[in-house]
Image 1 (tube, rainbow, N blue to C red):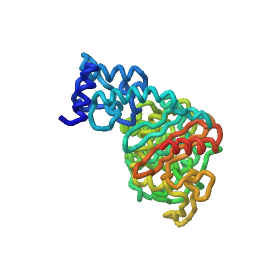
Image 2: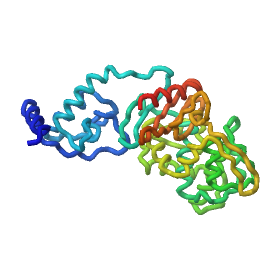
Image 3: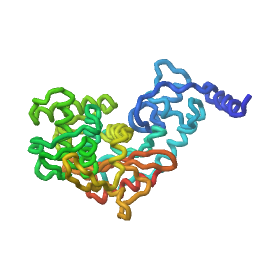
Length: 356
């Protein structure tokens, strides 16, 4: 008998648990907290009790996420995972909590392992600010080719005073890819409305929709798209992230959105670019600089392993940042929302990065 199996048999005998490794049960999709087998968003003693009952094959005992219980990462569940969970629970109280800078909600997750490495109020409803634009870009690319040439039109009248702009003008003609560049790098609300209206008219095959109707239609497309990728607690009514009581999300959903958007080549390239000069189809040119300070060479918050994503700031949302890092062959996503200042969101993000 293999020594590990022999040891397992002895431990199992003492604990009245099966010695064999049980295959992982089907788990929920998305990211998980290690040890959170009941899926309530926290790792607690109830999870240890549940795994013990499951290993004993107690009637009507189910694990919400078996992968979260596989502490030993060997593809199965046994008493070693139970023992490791107990040790982890004891040390959990000693785990440092990032209390400064303060935020409303934050998370750090590994895309490759699916593990949620840090979480703080991740299921609390929050305003998404310009993080919304990751969904706007994703949805638009479903209905339009990146090479589609779009003429900036009267939808500019819908852009609110005080918006961040990429300075496109009515009559300019740009490829969708270039509009997304202005929207994601410079966080242009003007580009967001042009993208939304063009995508809505293409999806509905109705060029007669007025601008307001087109934006409303696109918001429906955004919500459908969000639901299709697993965002369960979000609602969107505009493409740029302007504060609205009907527009909300959670950090849990933003992790899903960020991972999905990062899998789209156009969005991954644009959000990971520090600066780009763009020549419009109509001949004009402009240079856009990314609003993400993690990408600024020589800047105070520059991080060589930062691979992109998106900033967002509104009165309701506070200062927010989704960041992606490439570290030792793995990809990580951090989300911070509700920070008090621009500096706070970068300092907190870099503290999260330090947990990798």
